[in-house]
Image (cartoon, rainbow, N blue to C red; front, top):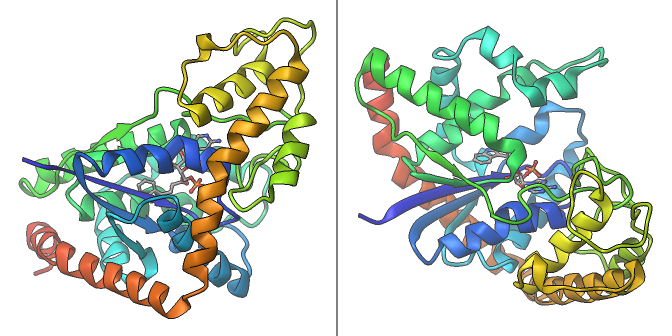
Length: 321
Ligand code: AMP
Ligand code: TRP
């Protein structure tokens, strides 16, 4: 039987090269073998301080970018347009325990030292589990940082099935072989991310080529001069080699640069060439907002239709239907 896949992207900021290599490109490749659904997880962006107008703009930008990156053979939609996500999330909040939510690494990191921690930051993994389980998928292409949340999703699915009868498919995370954790260019020991990294060390998918080159040429490298892949002792150089390999489609050991400068120049070229078609397609799609709106409305309608059965089964099983 054809496998099914689902993943989602939070519009808390502009999408980054980490998103592209860690999850979007693997998702694009999965389209060859699986029936795929991808969403912009705008509800997940409400877990931290946000500005409503900016969220709206970034949600549309992220959805357009997913299509521009090549997810055009999938159903693509905006999470909040499909109410079943929050409906199922509540059933899963009633399946999950406070203790396991509190122990999530991302919750601990994002809540540490904060005075006003939104309750949704704690319950967020139940909503993420709902996103996945709603679609009865086998595969979830995500970066390394989401491994624990997918594990929790599996635990919740198994627990629900055991307590109330077989309802959910138990999914599996799919991580790319390379680039499951792209690091910040200025702090190669921190993840490149919309909120985790620094602007100077993060490449955004819509960065103009000159900015991409500038950021890569100024990337922090390591002491010494030898170009070698060794994430522990040479995190900066290893990150550049990973970007170069992932963007050029060649294995890391096929590169033999003599200097850090040469490595940076070739990496900058490869990243610029990877982003070029995405940016061109983004401009085309953005030029026709009505068509874009139709595509996303069709995606949401498709998702409502595909998830109706599961929602009925889950409500019956837990006793609210
Ligand atoms: P987020 O931007 O946090 O919604 O992440 C969306 C997807 O991109 C998730 O699957 C993340 O694991 C993945 N991702 C985010 N940042 C990185 C990174 N620096 N390296 C690899 N994957 C990433
Ligand atoms: N929580 C994910 C992140 O921060 C985004 C996300 C939301 C997601 N729902 C999902 C990823 C469902 C995979 C499947 O990156």
